Length: 106
Length: 269
Length: 156
Image (cartoon, rainbow over all chains, first blue to last red; front, side, top):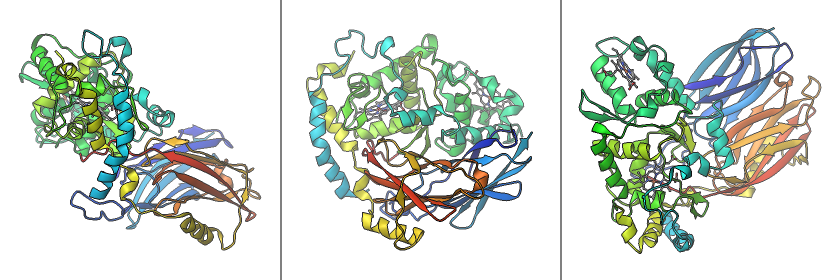
């Protein structure tokens, strides 16, 4: 299971713009590299990242081979209500890594 | 790696290498070999501002993924003792300052241990669990976690008493010309630090950021992985990661870096 | 004792050694061309789409230390309201094997049109960023990045 790191505040004022940063361990193997014996290393990448907040998708990212290994993304969302913020990374095989944080809005 | 590419590279590198050869070596006149305490610089000082920012801002530092993973492992029971690191040590922050003292001589084991070796010993002796291979993700994660607790603290290893022969062995290795190209660590990192080779700058070869996230590796690696790369760079057969030879060299590097702050997880080119 | 200091030719030797470890990042990679990028842009934005220049700000280092990971920050001038916001941000490369680098989907709930990530660059090139607004208009900006060759390739 890949390791993830999520940085977002635990609470925010209603209407505040909240900054979110996430990072996940993943080689983002391009498919253009060769191993020590000269064999091509198969492409293996995360293709989609989504952030859902209180049940609604607020951010999505489509990744290609040009995204650096251990993909990092920083984005913002408007604090609207207290709720779960769900992060999902989907790789090219359809495997999903899911993380969840609670954002309290006062 | 394509042979064609490597040859072309050698040719292309030639011109700028001559430039390097024409430059006077720094620190040559000093009677005491090495780098004066006031001139000691972390590898961070040789980075572009963007890479420095990536290291400093922990919310974007990719090495923090290993620290975070280490925190998970810290709380997981392992081995016949069914104990976690946390069972004996409490919070990871209890080990604040420890990394600054390593490598350290253990009188009971009669061995010089680096941080990895100490963690391994806890696994074997206190957890009665299978050893973690050197450079495994789990050992890197635990080492990064422990070293990160000392981020900002100055390196301060013991070099007297029982540590002395290890220091001498490490120091001798640092100044010994190695490999088919017969170059010592000192020739690059004492005598030519700060020199530009195209866009590449040779640093002082300081050990204060490990485990380090290296952009070239696209992952986190140990000091010994880095050292092995330097041995290979001069076409020397590298010692094994975790070998007594490399732990002794690590002690010399840590003594030579005395006072530099721990940066784990550092980000390097 | 410094064995090295007694050797008059050591700096020449040193130069030779570094030569061994230098290898261009570009020597073993597939490359696309600016034409490939134009094609990818046509596919993504609609044939004949002509983004206007402006409203998009991208921050990339002028000189990247390593093409494996180059920090990219993008912001777009937009009120980010339900009526007027950024819908999609596209990033295109003229030299990477795949012209589409990354895409971001935003909306009024983003609050601000501001994203960051780290991208790979197979060599010195222009990076083009296009923003599609909620009214369908396209805005773009480009930046040049000099990518220094990966310096010390090792097999560890």
